[in-house]
Image (cartoon, rainbow, N blue to C red; front, side, top):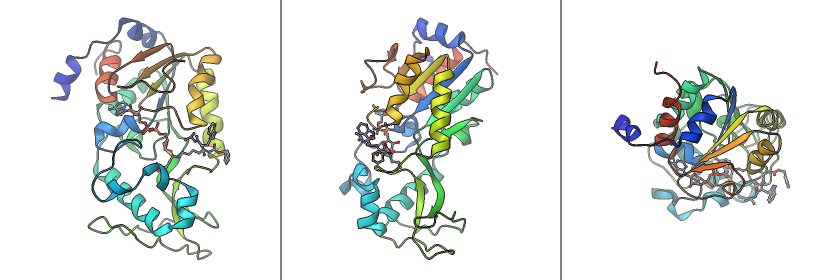
Length: 259
Ligand code: BJW
C-alpha cells in the first residue's frame, strides 16, 4: 500500500537535482511530519476527550500555572499516543538519506519518531515529551510514569524526589526560552547547510519559524514539503504540495540507489 502510494508520486525534477548535489542537508520538521503516524498536529481538531481543549492554550506556561492537573493529563495522553505509534515512511526516508549524505534533523516535535526511524543526528528545539523534570528545581525525573488505562481529564502530576515540586514534561511552552544548546546547534546547522528541507510546519511559531530565512540568507537552497501553503511558502525556493510520508520516500528514492 505504502509502496503503491509512493510509486504514484512524481518528484519535481529540480528537487531531485538539488537533493542529489547537496552534501550537507538539514531537514526541519514540524507536527505534519508525524501526522501520517497518527499524531494530531496543533491546528487540527484533536480526538476524543481532548476535542474540547485548544492545544495552543494547553501548551503554555500559563496553562500549567493555572491548572497543572489538566495540562499533565493532556501530556500523558499524548505520551501514551507517541508510545503506541510508529515512524512513517517519511521518517524512514530521512534516516535512509542520512546513511548516504550528511543529514541532520532539526525538529520542533517532542516525539522520538526520527530517532526510532534511525536518524542519528536529531536536534529537538522544543524539547522531548519523555524528558520529565521538576518544574521547580529542574531535576530529571526518571521514575516510571503511571499512565491510566483510559484517558482522563485531570491527573495530579508526580512530585519531585529532590524538592517536592511538580513534575512536568520536558517540552518548551509558549513564553519559555528554547534550550540554548539545541537552538545554537540548529542555527549553526542551517547556516552551514547546502539544502534545508522544511517539512510539515505551519511556520508561525518563533524563533523556529525563522530558521528557513536564516538558512536562505546564509546561502542554502530551501525547499518546503507541505500539503498546504504556510507562512514560509513565500520565502522558500521551491514548495512541493505533498505529504511527508509520500514525498520523502519518493524524493530520496529518486537519487539514492536502493538498499
Ligand atoms: C503536513 C501533513 C502531512 C499536515 N505532511 N505536512 C516573534 C514574533 C511573534 C511572536 C514571537 C516571536 N518570538 C517569540 C514569539 C512568541 C512565541 C510565538 O512564536 N508565538 C506565535 C504563535 C506568534 N514563541 C515563544 O514563546 C517561544 N519562546 C520564545 O520565543 O522565547 C523567548 C521569549 C520568551 C519570553 C518572552 C519573549 C520571548 C517558545 C515557543 C514554544 C512552542 N511550543 C510548542 C509546544 C511544544 C510542546 C508540545 O508539543 O506540546 O511547540 S507550540 C507548538 O507549535 C509546538 C510546535 O512545535 C510548534 C509549531 O507547530 P508546527 O509544528 O508548525 O505544527 P502546526 O500544527 O502549526 O502545523 C502543522 C503543519 O503540518 C501544517 O502546515 C499542515 O499543513 C502540515 N501537515 N499534515 C506534511 N501529512
